[in-house]
Length: 579
Image 1 (tube, rainbow, N blue to C red):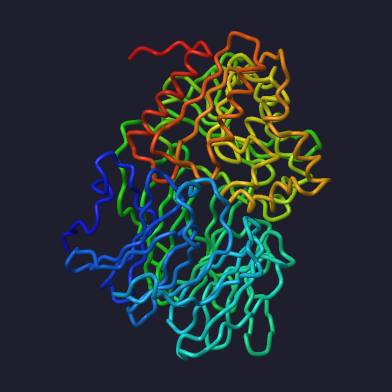
Image 2: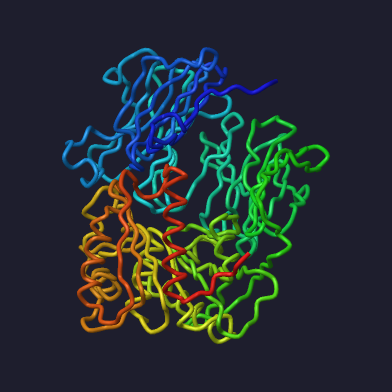
């Protein structure tokens, strides 16, 4: 059929600062619940639209954060999670505790929503409610901060008076619900398998059975299509998709278009076709239709980008970190560069919260490479590229490993004549902003420029604002004496030394960032300017009506990228090629 516009996020506000933050379609496709975020804030308000008429209903839900929506199969309402209404003055800074899981029935005010579960005795617990594909069970994942370990509860939706049953009651591992068959629930878990596996759990007897054992690759996610498990693995930070029968027996590997990142493979349990996107550093995200029966992929939609991928090359190398650990790193650049140590190089990293950096396409990075620059992306410890052990090796008292990995990446690039310190810039956002701040204070001699974006830069007070307390699972707590000592040893704000020549620095933040509050960047900028002695510029760029990054209008993204590259062109003394 011919498509029609159901909701255009570009028309939500004149300046583009109200963004679509989430959608949930009812089972009969009659209603769409959708969330809105203003000025990049994590706070969301949700509304409901009639899909046939395109009109909004009267439903209006507020003070929602870190939650989606999941419809019941009677199409009368959905589950969601929210916090109590904060005080207006401190809504962007005050800590977030005591999340509650509710059920909203269409046509009723939010004040009438039914409380499904809360824990007034456990202020740090959060709740994610999802209805099973057959509509009979509400699965409640119970989380504490950013720790991947979770609890699992459930509620029988066929019985209005059924209580919430606590199924997995210890924070022993990560459990991701896949689907169910009668009393048998399927879970992806890292229990006794740091790289992940698939198990079945009988909710009546408690019996567990391993269906897909742990593999050398890291299991990212599992779906269910054509009555087959679709397993998404990471092999050295690149995608590998495998299909399995319900008994765990291997069927085949999905042949991807190349070395890169695949995402999607969504749908219903008995669907015989699905869609996935594939991207790499030199391949714009392309959507493929996949036939689950024949195993064939066909291009469904391909974006038109004005560049020639054959002009660029991607390599993956492995280098040795300070303690001997082998770290993978992607290096991307135009064909034919000379390894003479004179290439401006943009070294980007993250290294935390079990997040993996996989190949992805970026127009702004293509612009950088068009200017003659190199992109280097190491897969640091603290991420999820090699499972939970890799993650834990970059947390709490082990956090210095992440900085050592990043510094070693810079030294490898210099040693192998890709670049030299006078041509090397480091960058990262959020936890990656901490990475940049820690490395530039530990090794100011190694880099010419540093770009910490929305960074966690005060490691002694991060837990006192919004959701910052949740990061103690990765960083440790400043209230713990041993962890305080480790945090103080690398906290960027507290390790600036007077009369020191630091790299040219462009700090970026948003005035509405309620994830990593902008005070981190404000204090670090002021302290760095006071300590810094060379003529290299130290600047802070504060975006207005913007937050941590999500929902930022395209115009603001372009403006920030232009400022970033202009700063590096000047700082690294680059010669701009003339076309």
